[in-house]
Amino acid sequence: MLFHAIDAALKLSDDITVVLYHQAERIQKAIEEAYSDEIGKIHFHMQDAKQFPGTGGAMKGVKVKHTKALILNGDMPLVTEASLKALTQGDADINMSVIELENPSGYGRVVILNGKVHEIVEEKDCIPAQKEIKSVNAGVYCVKKELLDRYIPKLSNDNAQQEYYLTDIIKMAVDEDKTVHPVFVAEEEFKGVNSKLDLAHAEELMQHRIKSDLMRQGVIMRLPETIYIDCRARFEGECILENGATILGTSEIISSHIKSHSVVESSRIEHSDVGPMGRVRPGSLLKDTHIGNFVEVKKSTLTGVKAGHLAYLGDATIEEGSNIGAGVITCNYDGKAKYSTKIGKNVFVGSDTQLVAPVTIEDDVMIAAGTTVNKDIAQGELAISRTPLKRVKNFFYKFFGES
Image (cartoon, rainbow, N blue to C red; front, side, top):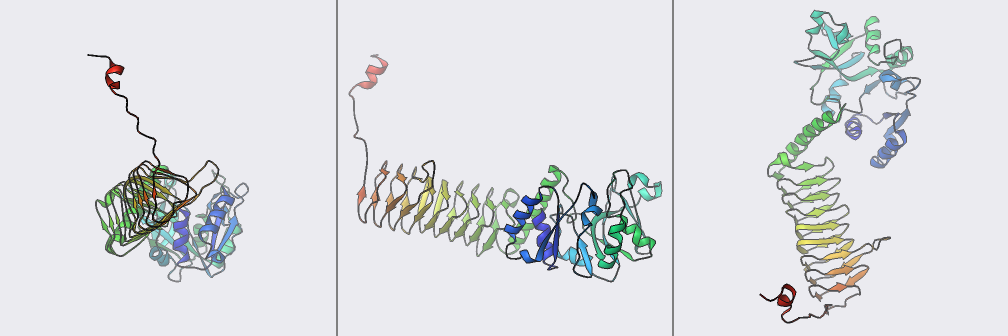
């Protein structure tokens, strides 16, 4: 959720401060890893929440570089650049985000007089006429630096919760006859996430946004409401996603067909088709390749390969023209370490073959069904390992007894 807010903020400013408290080190590390190319624009401030709890307490000690500061909430993943930009416009001392709700019950009301915010009244303090107000505070502000520098040190925790409230700066500004301008925003974008139910709802809205944009760009989706697409995924060319497809992480799908109920995780798929019910795990590259139902590929590169069904290909490199039969697995893990399997061009791997890594299979090789390959195979060879077939005459009748 926080990354979405940071992404939107970075489109407007080169000076982003993230206020941290709970699990601060973990969150800072995740941000530094995700934004390594832009980390110079992101600063961190540790909130002393024990001494200064609340939204106002979070701002104590924050240094503002520019003449205005846009104050966002970390639990608003749906905000967009356009909406935030609207909050930064004009010469008002404070621009305050406001939502119009048909049912504002449970929210503090924003009293607006002559186009300016007059006060924020908590619902429990509202008189009957104020309860009819449909304008509520969305919790995002753009404030002049000069006011923040003066108001934040004046905040008091003399209230029932003994917290420092950022909303108190609105009263300070009104008392000084400063201009507090209401900026009406969409509820969908400024919806906070305060529960698992809110999180699920926000995810639905985000998915609708992501898929609508991709379909406008030309991605074909069958029953799009059944498809899940990570916001970091990228698509190029003519792409088809069938019902139940899941595209996760930093996946790149290029002119490819992802069939029903297949999963692609942080991998690149080029001019290929996956599934139905295929799985491509992180770090894989598929080019001009077909993998079918119940084929799992992990951290492997497949170029011009066919693997029709029921196979596991992990830590492998397989070149063009090779065919992987049903039940083939790369035995890439010995309980301590992972090892690689290398398969050349025009290799036929028969059904139920185990490839015990590390192993190299050169070009133009045939591997018979049921073979366990634990040695390198040279170009042009046939590899076969089978236990001799034993037949016992009349065993069925001896086992079950004569009729």
